[in-house]
Length: 373
Image (tube, rainbow, N blue to C red):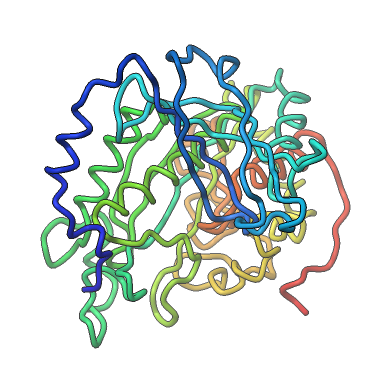
């Protein structure tokens, strides 16, 4: 199994230095989304005192020509802090600072989808929109081969791996446990984790969170996963179909509810939202992966617990549908629904904004999809 050379370094030596006093200074790691819409970047600055809120954090800048976001002749991009978390790697009082990206003229970067998402969330604040996202991912070696798989072949067929226990069933639990604890320490609202259907594939859940916080927490949870996996020398992939053939893909199932949906008789509001979703299927497919549907086309085949990308469907407890109403919700006539279409590499701001636009703002209209061309 090919792992990163950095993982072979003696971590006990690093620990000696991390235990040194900080001289009343604070390290703040600024995190942002790069020009791919999927990659995360980070760099650190020293602060003279511990920030108590995002408002205490200064704006910063970076070289956008090295992150696929600008030309070298006009490369400065601005980092605007929008969310702050505890740093589980350097520990208190150090911080993780999630940022929006602005171009030289203070206009949001193309991959900064948060700004518009927040405007939409503010419009429906009284509806108290809650989200929970189920992030699937795959652990890979540096050679791109799934972690724990035979170097020249495949493991046994899917069946024993989902929520499995035992060395022959699950690979990489150390990374999962370390990531879980890192999220809890940081203040990310992680709700749980489990081994997934394909061996070396896992899932963690974030939420429920209201409005814009969903995107903030999921992006930071992804950053923490990449950073934890780095320490182990393993690569974390959010590719929606990392292995072709008879293997499950990776999604980011999104659970959604509003205050009326959660109250008595809420099933009526859920059904109304699903009816609206049925009329904007192509708009949502376009919004649910960074490549406008082409990434998800490899995953949403109608097989391996997915719906068909070309068809909208809904059903109670149906994991092969676009929208699943959980069994208990159907019985209690209130609660939430699950949109199973978002890909593992989706931008949570795009997904949550699309749900609000269709289900609450009742927007209509559709266009053809790139993936069909």
